[in-house]
Image (cartoon, rainbow, N blue to C red; front, top):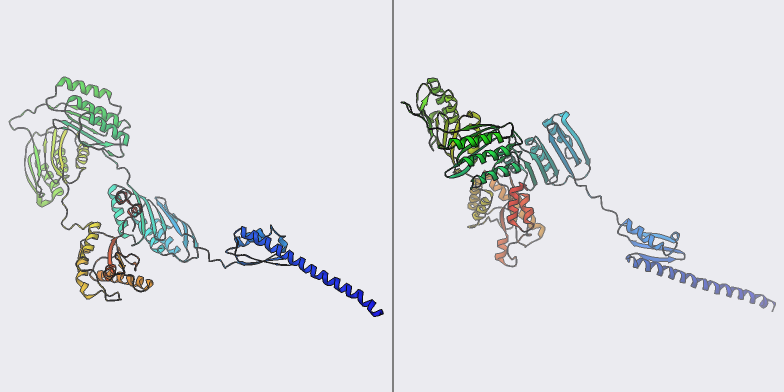
Amino acid sequence: MRLSKLLIPGLAFAAAAGLSLVAAGFAVTAVERSTETGVRRALDDGGYTWAEVTADGLQVLLEGTAPDEATRFSVKSLAGTVVDAARIVDGMDVPPADGLAPPRFSAEILRNDSGISIIGLIPAGSGRAALVKELETLAGSENVADLLETAKYTIPDGWQESMLFAVEALKLLPRAKISVAAGDVSVTAISDSADAKARLEEQLGRTAPPGMRLALDIAAPRPVITPFTLRFLLGPDGAEFDACSAESEESRSRILAAARKAGLQEEADCVIGMGVPSPNWARAAELSIASLAELGGGTVTIANADITLAAAEGTESALFDHVAGELENALPRVFALHAVLPVPETRDAGGIPEFTATLSPEGQVQLRGRLTDAAQRMVADSYAKARFGSDNVHTAARVVADLPADWPVRVLAALEALSYLQRGAVTVTPGNLELRGMSYRKDAPAEIARFLSAKLGEADTYGLDISYEKPPEPKDKPLPPELCEAQLASAQSEAKIAFEPGSATIAAQSTGTMDRIAGVLGRCGPVRLEIQGHTDSQGREAMNQNLSQARAQSVLNELRARRVVTSTFAAKGYGESEPIADNATEDGRESNRRIEFKLIRPAAVEDAADTGNGEEAAESAEDAQETKE
């Protein structure tokens, strides 16, 4: 009885403890569920559905794979807005980061009269020391500034070729900026003349590695014109310029406007150049042309600051005196006027002294007329032979006394002027020189006018009647690139280049086709070609790619075996990526198995072609002179 009394309270106490433990368990579970629900909802609302949330008592375990460290931090921060951050256990994983992307390697080379500087980031192991040494060879070790940085990354494809080309280009360009990247070179330079610019563009385009993108911006400075010359003629057949020089666009516009007002009908232009003798050149030209128009005919010649106004024969003396006087008073300072009113020649017993030289289309030259003495005859004969060839000159001039004192100078000037022509004749008389003929150069009249204005005294007048003809095409003129490309395609029209099944060996029956293609390339000029290999879609894509590359290379090797110069050719396989027919049919697959020859075109053409305007692309290529090589 006594034991029962002692046991009952103990059992009651144990029962109470058990009930408390059960109650506590339910309370903890409720807290854990509430915590998980709150954190889960916050993460779902934030878009982090990949994260797993597990509550263990007061601790909150976050698990899952975060895409990066920034996202992992964001998940922890968001969970910390629901529960105390100290309760959060980070069990999330982050995949290992890929290696840092390689930087864009590039270099910029500047060259001028002071030396060469190179700056940029280049791959380590790409031959920095050799590069700097070669630059020092060009400019001297003390004149090269090496500002390059290097980084240890794999050398990108095309980097070495681009840098080697840049150094070769620098050898041709004493003043240039060259920007180099992998497979991409931009050249900005200044040439000495328009002809030098064209030669540089052709040479750089020809030597650039196949597949490299080349942008050219070569400027040609304004020419130095000496003497600075203008020659305007007004006659019964209308008005024209033999020569016209201007120092600016504004000056050219003013001179041409004055000429049109004086009667100029045809299209004309003035060469813009350096060497103008006065800032008032345009004003002097306007006044001189207007005075000639007031006279009604004749010529006006301006050579530097000397102006010769020659009236037409038969002009009234009173009108001539009035116009010449007004012009002389109105001309800007520096300019000097010499006015000439022709008077009829008086014949003596011997007639008017005259010397004539004729140049035939075959290059034969005859000298006739009067010369001052035997010494001058020998000098004129030797001078003509030096200009036209010893076997092409026949001298039949006679020695006459009492010729003008400047006769020898004017005879040699006449022979020099005749050498500008392909055929023609020049006649020298006292006070006048007449040159007639044909030239293959459009600017021949202007050049002859500048020459005669410098050589003849201001008292002399001269006349020019020079026509222009387009030079005949040379018999061995190479095919232009576009025609070359078309003929290469035509060479495969009868029988295309075929290969042994599944191999890169050219089939025996294609020997004739390869011979025709080699013949076409032998007639082509400097041309940059990509030999493209294409396959059908049968087989694995990687296998087709490798096969097309091997076949393109086989064609290149066959051309080399036929002694075709292939230094500007590239072989590239395109696999099955560019079908021209349906691969579902045998005929279609046969068409897709092919070799094509495509021009590597200027970058300006390709960029404009991407916009869908081929005509603007072609014009842009001609204007910008940017080439993709």
